Image (cartoon, rainbow, N blue to C red; front, side, top):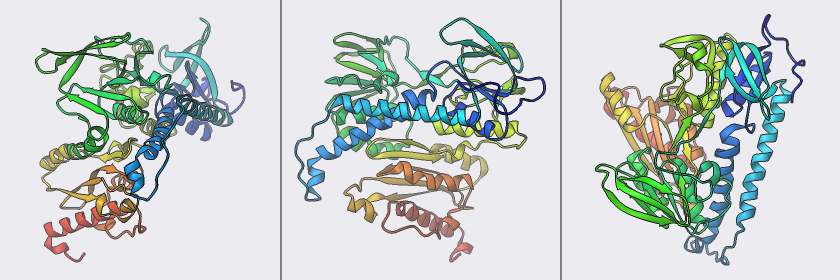
Length: 497
């Protein structure tokens, strides 16, 4: 634990300039940013440093996906034969794959903690809550001792937990959430995954690569409902139809009972009529996440949550009855804006900049998202439905072009040419509104478009940027050039510009 007497001196009358409740990615970035700018900072954490992302989310899951991806690649005899390569049957050790994920978590958690300590942040182990304006009470871990601290500003960054719908009973062994799944304690012969969002898709990728049979259950009327429909249709051919996955849409897992086997009672989502009862070896519940906002003492400052989420404005100020609460901020999943680790980190930096007197607002449109399946899916900006709605409101014509990986030299060289990029833009100004990509390294490719969205750039400018050949980035270049031509065609005076 850091020495609370060391480091900067807090503003007159306060123990700290900033107290951050929660040490996930949002809290970490906020605390680090504040300390690096000379503020006296404390961060409160009752669980493991690093929060969901480091300990139970993106970090360990990517370690599992990396290992599973190697197994899938080496086991794909037909793909390897295309290169003239013939590999022996693939063997893997489940425990060593799990150990790889665990060791990565420990390394990053240690590095994160040391980074905060080097920055001069005081780490307070315990559960924090508000006790009126500019006051935080911490119940120390391992005991009932409570200590109160005053702070000029307080940032809430308590994150989220997996959502388990009513009727589903978990035991952590046969019915579990992503929190337990990242431990990879065993490989069920047959596992049902409830939910086909990015968490369900990523774990389906892991389990099928490691030899498990998967049934995917989606309550909404189509699998992958949160993804662009055209991207989802193409991706499903490879990620679901091309693997040992039985995907069912429009059915609700009304009751799930742990055991050997696990019993799943399925009903029609629309009529609630029974469909069938499945008996499987295990169930992964991947139905989204809920904010951790209970017992935070929000009532002591007059704040009411909305479905558990803390309302904030784009400067990250907490709102009560629509008005900002002085010196109170919230960042990350608990705000319910974009429940992604890098969104939380960006929000943390925005909150601190405003605390420092440097006004800044967050731009959610420019924040990309990625699903790390094999191949990957990524997106940034508006969906096509959102873009059409905006076009109707503002009176412009929406442009949409597609760029295919099968026309890309690098993708062809890799024998990984199954992919698509959809680019959305304004036909009047050429401004990039959004993009959706499925294909090899889609998570990396989306960043270029995210930067363009952040700068509100026009495809007329972007089309002239030179991309390295042969690289996958040329998929983006082709889309920009097609879009620029569409803009020029819509405005004849721009031809040749």
